[in-house]
Image (tube, rainbow, N blue to C red; front, side):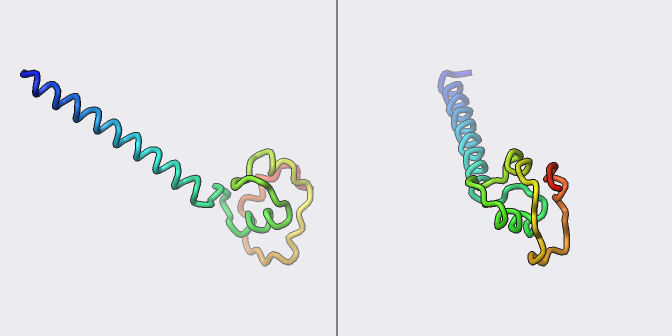
Length: 90
């Protein structure tokens, strides 16, 4: 194998690794910027955020654990999926 072929293979490997790295970074940025917190029910998440504003874009476990009361009387929810993520709700 000639030195030229070895250099071409190295260059291809470096370019591939760089492209993969940039793809991973783009995916992370897209995920963080999507506004989705990973909460299973967006309507319930919105009601929780209105009742208990949090500073971060994601509802963290510590935020969910800190909620002990939640009035959803006027929220027009038809699904409570995710309510189990509020372990200290009374």
